Image 1 (cartoon, protein in one colour):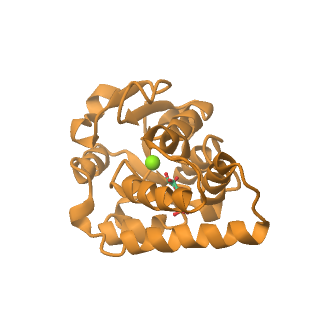
Image 2 (cartoon, rainbow, N blue to C red):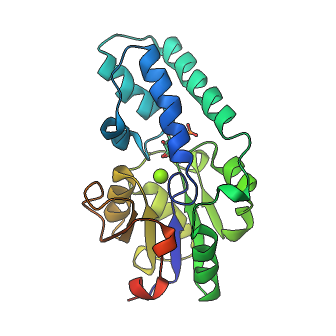
Amino acid sequence: EYRGVIFDLDGVLTDTAHYHYLAWKKLAESVGASFDEAFNEQLKGVDRMGSLNLILAASGKDFSATDKLTLADEKNLHYQSLIAQLSPADLLPGAAESLQQIRAAGLKTALASVSKNAQAVIERLGIAEQFDVVVDAAKIKNSKPDPEIFLTAAAGLGLTADECFGVEDSIAGIRAIKAARMFALGIGSPAVLTEADVVIAGLHHFSLQDYLK
Ligand code: G6P
Ligand code: MG
């Protein structure tokens, strides 16, 4: 029986995945790396330096450690300018209702995002109080697809992995959930999220009854 649901943030509860995309695209262009939506799918759920390294590898050029830190900061400043005006109106359709549905059914909720901006984003969205546990980059060593963030969230809820399921929009995130041996609910396209157990287009299609075991 499920007793907890662990949510990714960017691209699941709000469309900040699009802002990460815009900021990475601008950075990729500045270093002469080709960048498209398919490549972006590989970056989703991957932490900041991990994403940067993938883009720089695609540029075919060498960058010093100092250059990398400067580029990572540039991307983050651009991203932060894009999310500066975020408000509860930026919750994706069904996001608030899904959280309410889960909590009304007596299940616990956790957030599992490798973004260092996660806490600021959930505060601006007005949903910080809706999570029993928030696990972000500060609390883990390994980025998705490592299962660490989902296992840490389950432990924080006081639950075992098989008492939880995860909700994700990224390939790396679905892999992390499956590596944690949890049921994986994908948000997006079944053609992209091939390893998810079930895929829905968005949380406006979320129905807790359908996933309960
Ligand atoms: C999430 C997003 C990624 C982003 C990462 C790091 O996993 O899906 O696109 O690169 O967080 O975010 P940060 O805000 O720390 O740069
Ligand atoms: Mg995501």
